[in-house]
Amino acid sequence: MRFDLAVAILTGMLASSAQATNWLQLQGNEPPNAPAFRWGGFIQPTYTHILAGPVAGLQGGLTIHDGRYSTLNLNWPSLSTPHQFQVLRAGVAMRGKVNEEVNYFLAADVGRNGSTLYKDAVLSDASLTFNYIPGARIRAGLFKLPTSEEALLAVNVSGSYIYNSNAVLYMLVGLPVEATGTVNPGGTSTARLVSGFSGYRDWGVQVYDWMQRGQWEYSYAAMVSNGNAIDTPRDNDDRKDLTLRVQTSYLLGKPGPNREDLSVFLWRQRGSRLFGSEHFGLVREGAGIKYLYDGIRLSAEYLQADGMVIGGQAPPFVGQPFAAGVNEAASGWYVEGGWRVRPEWEVDLRYDYLDFMKRTVANEREFSTLTLGLQYFFSPALHLIANHEWRKMSVSNPNDIPAGPARDNAQLIADNLGDRMSVQLTWSF
Image 1 (cartoon, rainbow, N blue to C red):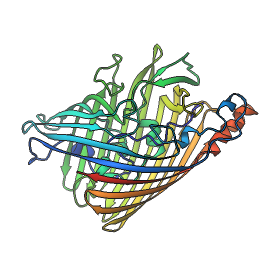
Image 2 (cartoon, rainbow, N blue to C red):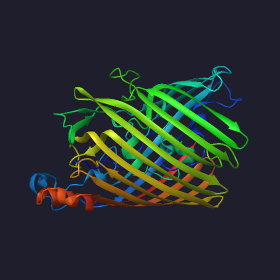
Image 3 (tube, rainbow, N blue to C red):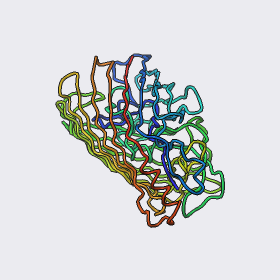
């Protein structure tokens, strides 16, 4: 039975809005006048309060958890309380040019989130980009996979929400796991984490470029990567993932991380994961559209997953194993927008939906969240975000769960999901 993937999990240097830019270019390359070395970073102290109490009324085998908080209502990575202050993300980075054709990017995450679950600091980016071949730049090392727009954007300059949409988080955050029992090919199996979350990143080699024709820009990326935990550049098998992305943009105004444009994009990731003694396929794919101009932002994206799908702890209580489906499916989407009502004030609104573990009807759950956000910009380097999330979880097929404790417990846990309020300060330096 699959439950929360930990909705509070965030990973370093990522965020959950959809701003308009070419992230392949900004994250992989340096401008012509860039120095050999420059450094910077950001810090994001965050307070989160989830409006939920312990689960009450559990029956049968779950009576041992009665009166405990569901992990859906606890803050990661401590999983100790529904209200918590933490430095959710903090990053330091160095980047620059080796020469006119080669540039580099190094970054570390020292916040308290899913990526740093087992370590106080993790390497989040380490890459070299070679610009020798016209139309085919080559980037090698550890960096973000060319997937969802929300996963690609940089949190400190383009994040309009504190937490990710359910669809992006559940399908793309990357949970490195190993089997802890017999693998069930027709349902879910138990698993445990073997490292911190991958955070939309992998070790690999990417060929990419962009080209401009008047106000039109076309870009592509093709990345071959390990598909393993990111705490080592070594692969755990001899199989690789292939991730592709294409984007077409009509340029409307200012450049940079919040570039004004209208863009459409497609992406697809295909690979496999070693689980138990076998490999199981993994497919992720999506399509989206984004618009940003004159203080108005609108975006939407659809995502789907097939094959290996990792859920949260099941049942959703601290100390329980994770649920892994080796032949599962999920789909979801988000639509969001923002309005810069004044130079220092922005109002944001997002609705996201996720249909998870769709092939095993008794395990299928649906999540929906409406997020209202308000941002205040003290300066380009300092801003405050406040979010209120109205969260809902549904048992998709209650009649396919045996009547009695199993069905009643599933409904109790779903109904117990609480709304989430959060405030975050971002300081970039």
